[in-house]
Image 1 (cartoon, rainbow, N blue to C red):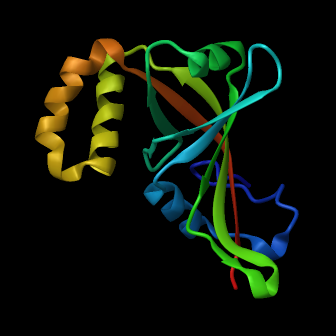
Image 2 (image 1 turned 120 degrees about the vertical axis):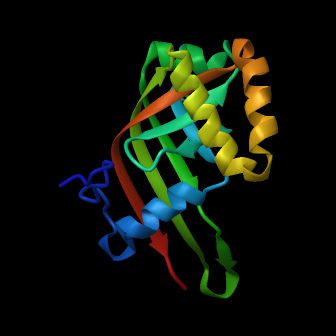
Length: 164
């Protein structure tokens, strides 16, 4: 059964590597960046690393320019995946790697409401520049015309790890 924010481990094959919901939420909250993967308009896939913020519920926000390949891909097909990988440690003597990761299946929507754009940018500032909030909010107002926000509406979240 999916959790409040879409947490659902039913499709994970390696049951011995499940990361619990609390740890998955913490990784999603603190992750520095994620990889947004989309269907390319010209065919194939397109994945790009992005800064993001999770609202603690069913939404991840990503900021971008008001035009570009990301937006064209999302307009072509709104179904996306988003992956965050935590710290890793290669263990050569054991031929393995310790890791933790969260995989999100979502529907991507370009935010049209300016108040939601401001809300998303404030969350991004609180995550990446908490000591610069006042200056950041002033910069947000100046950059609104050249900033777009994608809202990733979470459908399913799964998470794995390998402890060494």
